[in-house]
Image 1 (cartoon, rainbow, N blue to C red):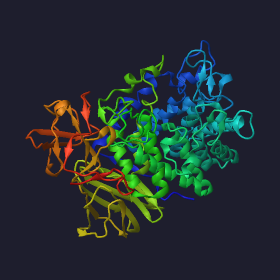
Image 2: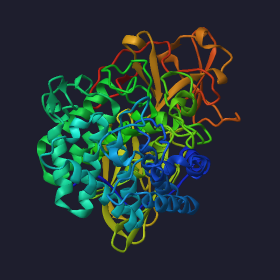
Image 3: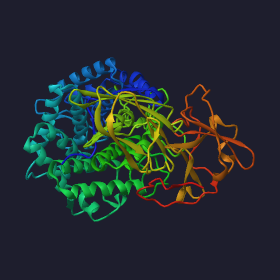
Image 4: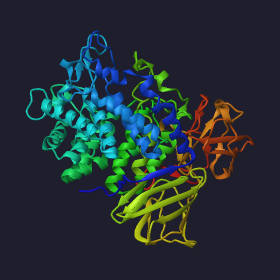
Length: 613
């Protein structure tokens, strides 16, 4: 089985606009600094058997792998030679920290991938050691994919072989018996990714064994999330035994196993879980989870953790690869442009732990400072993981399909890729998107070539206009790909005009009486910094009368979009894009008082529940 859409490894990016600003900041201000500023990221591997032992959080072993994954994916978008050199040096040190038996974690010899250790908390406890090895494998495999670094691949193989040696077959203590299963069973995903490269039977056997362990129980009840059985039974994700966000990573193993084995139940389960989360646990800002788990309520005010949203974006990319459904790409864009950018400081120096729908932005190093340790003052689960929310754009911006290419990313810049052996293609976008809805695309193949170019028509764009070489294109439907097939040649130009009229999500439950306002993919948000009125005295708006004025960004802090609206009482209210709101630490609100618009139901062609007056 093959994905309906997939990443094109040869693609290079020359991005401009807001994303490029964040990418440069993250690279310069964090990725090139973090290992030296937090040297125990790797030192904890080297001194794992020394006394006195380090006292660590159960997931400490994940930091290096998460950092590496983020760095590689950011590098794919920037092609920064300095960053590449930093990553190479990091990988060299990382693989040298691996023990002879394949172990690459921070826990003492007697605790290796046992998922418990004496130096957790007071008196010892459970660890997420296998989870840490999952993230190490993922980062190493991504680096190998781009560089063919055999040391990285061999390191990942060593980890997989160690896991198989300890847990494959009829063992007295199964992996599922080791605790923290929504985390530690995630290696099913990386084992499948590795099997694609090695074809080593034991790696696939271990992955399949873990899937059988999803449904394991003991006298106290379920040991794991029972992901496959519950999904096939139609259960909503928030009702399963393990609805924490980490469960998304072992579930990613199902879609990889579907491609490896063709087992239809894996595909069905994965798709069901994705739709369940979109309907019941994806928030207005594209973030996932409340209080680190699914609650079955997109209005829930629990913390929307950075790691949860990063996992959700990665999960959704697999859904896009699986189905080829453009609505999934719309959802990824929603999450990326709002929460993905918004969880970063505007300099790229830090990320949040919680990026709430209404509230303030706090650096994760402050909000979850309990994770800081000697030698890792800035490290926590989110600080090393957050950049993935941006780096994953490389996975879905431009994808290959059987007929040609699918363009998902809209924004200023140029994408270059290999169309077929000996033929290259350049797609240059001139646009202010997502500030404005007009996008000009120059299509330049190295020689005339016939192929299909799919353009994503977002589900929220009710009236879309497309012209090819100044001739209008017909047959445009929201929530689909517009397929343009022709003999493409140098000088071909597409003009895409998306519907940027406002659309509204009328809230329920905790957001009853409030409404979210969207302009294209952007969630418009009140930021106290941009207004003279405080949050408690905001005026109610009339959806039908919100004509608005697009303002220039003249502030010292960058914003992507600033709109000014006049309320029925005559007061003027400025709303900016969610990602920019709260950049100065000021309070912001995305659920606002808006009248004159009706509630819309959730549906596969309107997962945002948005309507127009």
